[in-house]
Image (cartoon, rainbow, N blue to C red):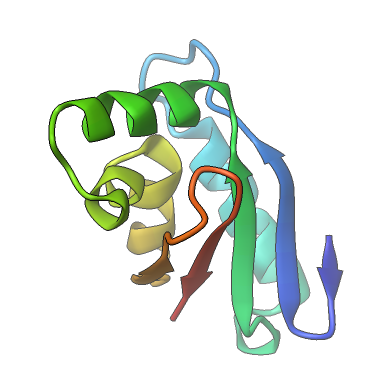
Length: 98
């Protein structure tokens, strides 16, 4: 959902697609449809596989920022140019900025 520069991923979860980057393609297409220059930031709540990845990373000693950055969603957002990650409220709210 997009409104006033805020692009909200209502629910993002990878599925058992074995690294086919389907979620990344969907997000990329949505950003293109809105227009990348119109988006001030993207926020999301980590869902299923991303949450499991995030929690595993934390349990292995990573901080919240790195734990988000290495989830499937984090990797996709970084690849799409959204490298500034605000993870203080992760996993309930993560913000990605260019």
